[in-house]
Image (cartoon, rainbow, N blue to C red; front, side, top):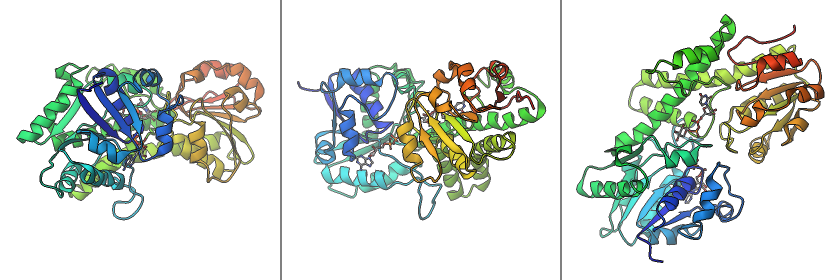
Length: 458
Ligand code: UDX
Ligand code: ADP
């Protein structure tokens, strides 16, 4: 079959693969290829067990794979073959050198830029999809323009706003798509080519076009604003616990103001995921770099509150369980950073489990999708850890339950059955406020929600 367009995605991770899968699904006359340097990842995308758990994604992959969607490890050949390239490689926070712990580590991204340069025999449109510090497109342009004169590259920024767990719906019905480009003749033509792809399934009004720096910065700012809402409500949850107010009632009362809005006001053990912390620290680094220490400090406090919230949760467990956890068995219910994903990157559960182990508690971890990632995250920890998928078996014989992930299934567990199997007095620390607290208290638990009075018998 002759395809109308050929599109390449470099990086088959949580962002790259679902984004490319959606394009393949919506544009059956385009050939979409996804490449990755990791052969196991590509093998998994070509198998019946996809490497990421994302509701609804399997069905779309089954429909498109082999038809107009292909997964390959041959990065170089695919660069030659395709004229529209989405770069979706990972950009973690730097762990070494200048900006360590703050700035983005651009080594994978730079390697990709050089690979594109070396393997391009025709002109290309190169689209940044990974979240990157602003002016990265400029650096990419510089690398790409250092080569042969007869091949040109237009670099666009098209940040991805989908969230894990709801990726399919977010990609199918996004609030908006953002495309940044140079405002030159060829930049505008490249922008139009990308707009054409998205208008295959989205109305034109949903596509925002801007200059390239605004697009790059908007992604960081959107994530910073979302994370700030979580930290804001979490900071108030601490006050609620002292002042006998109820954070759910406060969030409802505040969120019904249409200027504020109801979303992203759920108090919990803090935000996780690969984006929020990384993007805020990136923003903080940029502000410092540009001589804006007050602005940097303002955004940095969003991360500080997130850490405070996790430390507060642990301190509460310790205090409530008579200041000693040594030898006690704690069931961690949920390890993913949010429901409906197996992803554990920056999951609050990692930090909290480490602290439990530091107190010499024995930790039993349960999660419907994230146990393999949890085991990898905790591989070097000393102490007693076990992994049990079934929550009833995981909780049996434990002194406490600590709910870390808002899996729907955890709302519906038979807490009476669980209570019976636990050591008494039994404790329930609900880090996501998803359990029926009153009912669990009546069953016999000592219940510690977030931002609400504890229900205890002491
Ligand atoms: C986020 C952005 O939402 C998305 O637009 C961007 O593309 C990537 O980063 P993601 O990290 O996948 O997506 O999930 P999100 O739903 O934003 O949740 C992030 C964290 O905040 C999770 O740990 C979640 O549990 C927590 N959260 C979210 C809360 O604690 N309370 C809330 O009210 C909302
Ligand atoms: P994200 O959440 O941003 O998608 P992931 O780590 O899930 O991050 O995915 C990024 C993917 O990019 C990984 O599978 C990694 O192997 C891949 N990758 C990194 N560098 C390159 C490269 N130079 N060429 C192709 N793939 C790459």
